[in-house]
Image (cartoon, rainbow, N blue to C red; front, side, top):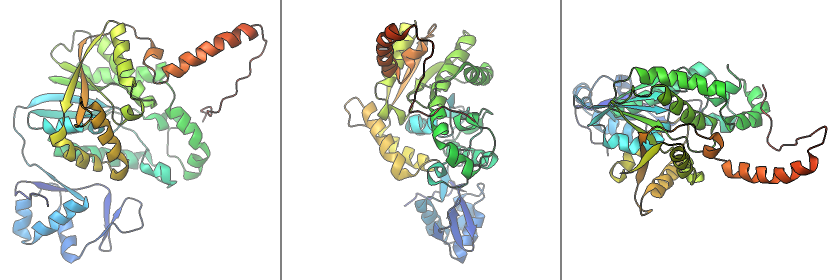
Length: 393
């Protein structure tokens, strides 16, 4: 049962539409919940401004109905006020959900001490869980607005704010514009291959320029950046773009503590990648200090925050992965932890292969190719057959 304090503000989740006395989730044709007349009047009152107390004065039996809405997950309860003069923290993420996946427990625990500004670099998106359901939901403006609304709601709960930059996430860099379902079905494998490609120079430069412009004007006391775990093009791209932006701003961010956070849930599949990246940064002259953050007390709320990103995943899918990542980050394997790394000194030039999640496969292939090349170095033609589709538009 939700604790309905009078100063809380009920806010609708952006996924739900009321039609003929029923709430529907996005494109679903099956009703999510039935609302009677009193429920419908209450739903209309949830404008994101009125407090629980004000609604109760207008509707005496609103308490039980609001509790039901909250338990159903169709609305959230945001604090009306946060402490003044909180520490300013700037958090960057590639996509609109990555920061809460990775450090949402820490953000919740620190919300009364820190005022968070969350910046999503890929502000243009057409990705939703409908990718896996073959539903025609690819309109860039619609999906981007929905994802921004999810992030704005999460940051409202954290007492912060959300900003989205104008960069495109990987699927849209493959093919900008509004796709049709038929086009998506024909190019599904090519899209998947593109999402797994290493970032190229033009992509790194575009994102690093956008990040540099942002960081050059920040007065934040702390800056949190993703470490870039896993094989997703945007996470690797984000790491390189952040490092390049930081190198260009050398000395101009001395007022801020800079942290890299471990991307969740990618560390579950790529369990050695975090240590690999840290070692590569150290080998190039940089230094990162590992910070173990116990988020056991706020972990349940983190899972609730993640459920707000309803366009991206279902709780029964993402929660076990996030919990597994939190256990693995724990020193004894039984707690709930999040990992960050404090940047103590900037690295120099880093070998891209050394930080690549598939570096082991590259090394093994290179070893095999040495023998092959010794036999065929005089060949006039080389034919390459690959089981991975070549990306094309």
